[in-house]
Amino acid sequence: EAGVAQSPRYKIIEKRQSVAFWCNPISGHATLYWYQQILGQGPKLLIQFQNNGVVDDSQLPKDRFSAERLKGVDSTLKIQPAKLEDSAVYLCASSRQGARGVSSLHFGNGTRLTVT
Amino acid sequence: SQQGEEDPQALSIQEGENATMNCSYKTSINNLQWYRQNSGRGLVHLILIRSNEREKHSGRLRVTLDTSKKSSSLLITASRAADTASYFCATITQGGSEKLVFGKGTKLTVNP
Image 1 (tube, rainbow over the protein chains, first blue to last red):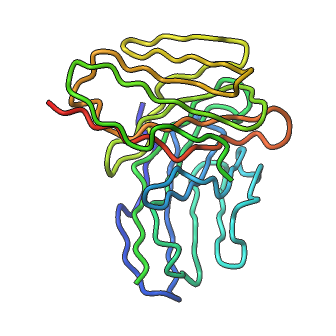
Image 2 (image 1 turned 180 degrees about the vertical axis):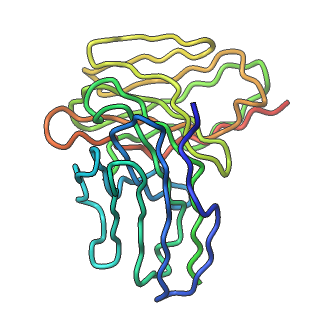
């Protein structure tokens, strides 16, 4: 099966600019996740979708970050305006069912964002 | 917030040796998962162990879980240079939000 696709692979922007990331999950996976991974740290969950509904966005900085999942498939994550501390790798993952139970996550290769 | 904490933060061994990484967590869990991340890549799922299991094997991997101590260990036997990567434990807590929370990881270097 095809893996989780993310684009772009790299992005460099100046602070206060906006940026958007795109994710296409594995076909048939109902749950989609966006994680932020700062260098040297583990991934931190930003938002979790079940189909096209939000399950958890408790750690999403909603004043600047937004995400949507149209038709329960592809998803976009947007940052507007970006800050220096947003420099990180943004990872998209998908799974067959909700995180409860035995489902493992399949990750894309991520988008490395550098804010200057 | 990060639920799991891996130990050590970094580990360097020779090819053929065994590597052991530990993970401690704070609250009761439904299951615990281990992932590998090669440099510049996404995470890859290695193994999942449920809260009612004590040990699980997959190829050269052996995972143990001690819920009384809130800890898990990942053992990689007969390591290879290709095992060089960061290893993360991740937990799903009982009750509350059903999200997978990762630790900070152990960076393993296997020298040829």
